[in-house]
Length: 154
Image (cartoon, rainbow, N blue to C red; front, top):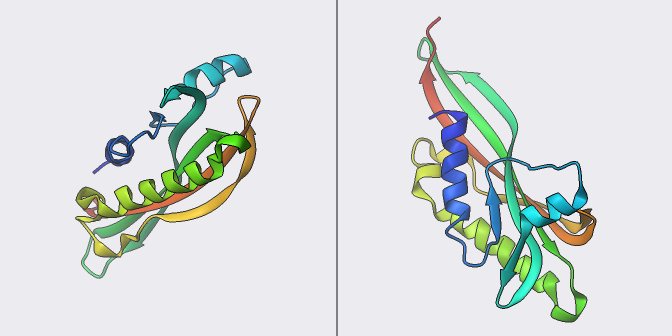
């Protein structure tokens, strides 16, 4: 599969998570903070909030296999999640639950793990507070590795 196809698979997997919010297959930016906020603003259970996730390619590692012209390529994707912080609503617990649901969805997706079992499982790398679109948010980073074996032409 291509890098773009893997992104599509990961995005489809994210979209299976209940109340995940807005999902994008790349990190979105805007010249105005209000435009970025509007892109990730959604309403969950009657509450308007910033809640979104995006996917970026973090690294690609290639390994020559013993069989001539065969290469194992491991791609590492970084999945970033944002949720506007509301202490009175205990949104830290909400973000923890969302992160766990994303990890479970990624681990349970057969397509992500079909080609090689050694690609690895989803990892929660960062869970902290950050400002995003001018709003104090809970922020998580999850990495997902995928691997494929391909035949090189030379």
